[in-house]
Image 1 (tube, rainbow, N blue to C red):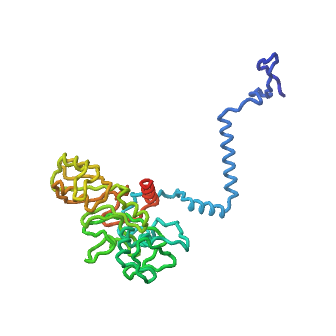
Image 2 (cartoon, helix red, strand yellow):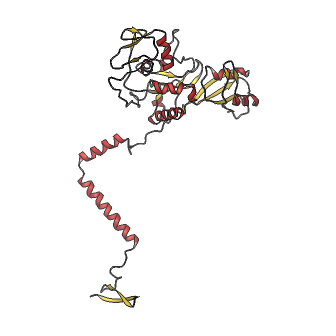
Image 3 (spheres, helix red, strand yellow):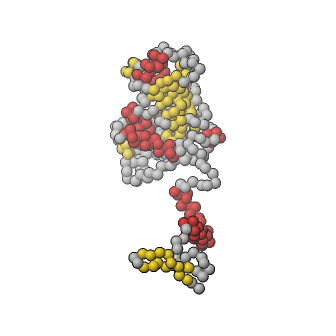
Length: 352
């Protein structure tokens, strides 16, 4: 049975609400927020259970494929961050058998490109060096010597050779960071038979160094066959940041640190202002760190020599934001996708 209970008046009329015969709370009253939340959670759980029961193995496979295409991370193990890989992966000639970075650009069959760009992408040399090779008459296209700068070739149709050796553009772009050891030449070959940086990487990697480090200078060195990026990073107007740690034979004076910061007069002009500070905390003043934004030949050594200091050890610890964290001397690794993206964004910002 149901009875009526008087609840109040509004507009002269009495409001009533129906109650159960057992004296419970009025029917039609508001359900508490906790009860509503519980009801919603139960509905969601039932919906997920039903969806899971209706899913087929093919659906699971498609879902896995979509994850791999979109780069979704697996929950079984986190991918190590850039610069934090295990030492085993960074040892010489170890690691991934194929580079992590591939080019997605596909050139049209009829498209022609400049000859120096072709040589740069083939890993022969950077564009400016490629122009020197062309002008010297050592480059042939379809058997004929080409010395005119600005000449164009079709990568899919023309045969290009340098000093009689055929060259071609690879289908992948390679980006390698090396911790260059001492007593090693930064070049693709050496007429005197001395060890070069190319002896430290697999022979099938047709890359070339971006910039140059002295024979006895150690540290970060980038190698690639991406001619456009290499040209932008090496061009003086891009002011790529390079960080060095220098160990001297005697204590440096505070006034000389200030001279480094404001600029040193060299035979080829005044150096640009740079960051400089003493790094050893023991008060000996033998270790100095500097950050340069220009790339003159033997610039660091000449700056300190002009101040009367002898360098015992010179190490480049970072190049264009790439550090040697976890990378042993003489070893190398492929750049991660985010590192390549950073370099491209850096070049784009400087270009803009």
